[in-house]
Image (tube, rainbow, N blue to C red):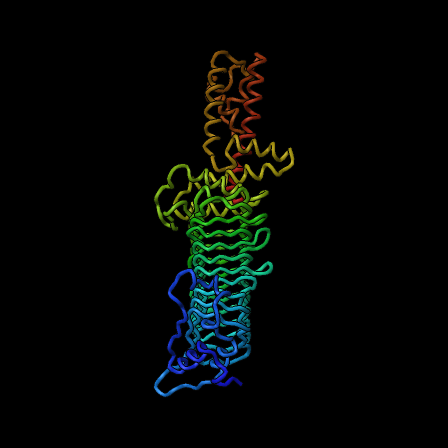
Length: 503
């Protein structure tokens, strides 16, 4: 048990100020000398033992009537280990511009607002802690130790704005199962090691604008299964490693506007993610693959130049999608600017291999905004992509369907072929006179009607059987028109059937 006589001058000042919640400021006023980076050189006049801090927080100097006790200390060097594991701390703690020689332990503790701002310390272990207000670590530097928040509960906000954490291993921040009733603010957060948040519950969102997370060759942000109202990784956010949001549930905005994703292998894993608004307008293409398999976005906004060479899109669904700032929802009639269809098809083809779903999803979106021609163009591209995966015989038949009727999505091609062949036959047959099959019987020879009778295999116009040619070239032309007529008819039927079945 500490006695008052054993305390140093700055410790007595802190002891006396605690019951009224007054702040003790040990700074000298010189920016260089007050920098916590130089705190190892601070003398006894600026040194407070961690045991004194812990004793005050655990009731060594009781509350005074009419005042709210709190520990507020500025510009001090805290020696020894501040260990509050399992403690119930009923007072606000505020350490500002301090240097802590050893890591802080809040493991399993229950506290009110706990602040260590503009300070330097080796790390914090707050696993399973219950923070009744904010956990505020703004602008502090944690060197050589991780920030551990596994299973912790923060009733207010978790403030990591401009904080720097250099973990000893793969992870700088370990916060699996973290629950924050407010938001996690990490603007300009810098980590050496990954930020690990699997299964975290962030009621008011995760904000990492301009943050820099470095875990080259590993995972920079592990937030699989996270539930948040919003996740903002914009304004120059940089991930040197994979960003993992697999199975995340984000009610509002997920933004990578102006971000830099520099993973190796997979840069962004959003498989099975559910998000309200997805803004993927990064500053540059991701260095690795973007995985959106089975993800869903109510709307998606992107930039053409943001996507990497590989984008896994099988199962990705969206209510609306648009380049740039304009998003079209179902029912809107505005025509997409430029040849957006070609750009979207190039985007779909970034998905490795052949998968029909991305084409069907894109075509469905064009239908819902009233662009049926664009939808048919997408479905035609789907058939052409599929054709490359088929055996040679099926590919040959596919080429025929494509040329003749565009797989049923361009049926007017059959009319073009029919018109061209009709003109060819009429002009060719009109220059000669055929021989009647039965002299003196049948209708007079009509080149146009005779050509149509050859081309249309269904029914008869009475010309094909009534006349024949002694001219070998014209007879072979007649045979050719009959064969082409059957091919055109078969292709039309196959193409229309395919269209009706939406395959």
